[in-house]
Length: 325
Image (cartoon, rainbow, N blue to C red):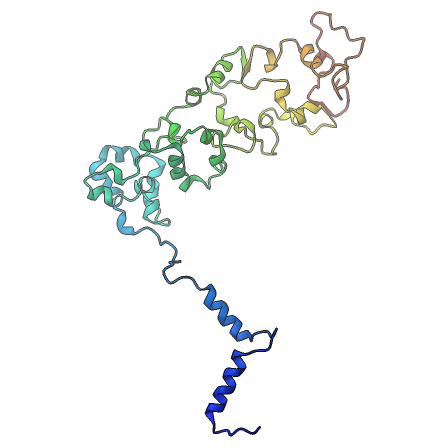
């Protein structure tokens, strides 16, 4: 049938039939599918997807305003490392001065010193306090495991050990010097360090934090590791580290604590038992798996006879599998 080019009604009818009645199973045109997807996936007009912006700078009043009322506190604080935040403008007012820790102070000032308008550390939980401190300190190499540390899990907050304004030590802003600070909670360890043979913590030659990281580690009991990722004991006792051609297995598998008590002991060399032979026989018996038993010619009844008199290189040897030398 021949249609006249000048008949717009015929062309309109043809367009309606073409788009309204497609063949069964026919795939809709690409343009129509895209338009349909756009209509169905668009968010509701009332939904606001705009990200929250930074805090309003007008909410912050600056440390000098705080000083007007809290001059005594300010004078103590300006002698501490935290005062340097007033000079650091990179993080903006939320990371500077008093308000870097206590939050924006404009509402506090406007309320005539209303303490509900400011973050008061003593009025908050340990988790809230720790979260506030970790805003700046989380990236520190010592605080990487702070949120999973034993102290954090026991609801010990940062200000239980540190004081930003009234610290008794210049280093780390501690409320007490070590080891008295640690002994405030760890009473059992205080008794261990008073035993006849002990690591010389009370004498000030080493500190608790030389072996433990109070902010947490991946090891048990928050114990540090040496630079070579070995037991922290090897930091000082380097001659026991090895590697040796003939290793004493407990040193590598169970660690130093298989024979020694690290804090203190009534026995020489911090051994677990007073008789060296009994310590050795706790593994070296015929009934103990993998460890060779003591030969029958070893006289265990002889006085002052100790295994280490012959097996002198008990931590490991490069020349003798029996650790004689």
